[in-house]
Structures are given as structure tokens and as C-alpha cells.
Image (cartoon, rainbow, N blue to C red):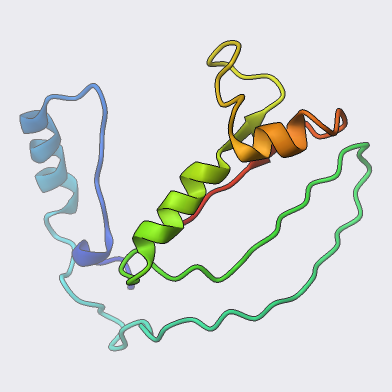
Length: 126
């Protein structure tokens, strides 16, 4: 199996830490520390290939994603990527955070304010 202890994260909310540790030990203590299939997954850097994909749907809505290779969380330019993410900002035409939340981000002022048919514009990095 490829399910090994080092490839898992256990998180919880509203549970006492000691209780979570007890449950983790009860249910996950027997997990192998390495793959039992005899092969480890490849850890080579992925290669970004530009492209286009269109999917037709029975919906009046259109979803568009623009994606760019921005490096990983360990990249030398991570700070710059996160800064760009914060500068672009974004949000929806309706915000659960109340009026004014995100109104002055570049995506809000240059996209949501100018094009009434855009419901949401968000920048993110992952």
C-alpha cells in the first residue's frame, strides 16, 4: 500500500489534544513507515505545459481559470509570489464578510466593479 505514516496528516478541531493522540495511536499506529508495494512514488519535479481545455455544460454559468507555473512552496521567489497574490486580492460580488471586504483589491476594482456579469475573481497560489 502507498498509505504510510510519513504521507499522512491528521488534524482535528474541537478535540482535546490528548484524545486525538489516543485515537491516532489506536487507529494509525500500525501503519507502515515505508511503502509495502516495494516502490516509492516518483518525486521528480513536475513540468508545466500550457494548454487549453473546454468543457460544455448545461449551465448559464461560465468558469474560467488562468494558470501559471509559479514554483513551489520551497521556491526562491515564494515571497514575491505571495506578495503578488495579496496585491491581486479578489473576492465575490457578494461577500460574507460584509460590505467593503476586499473592495480595494486590484481584481475587485479592475474586474468586479467594471464587469457586472463577473460574479467572482480570485487569485491564489498553491
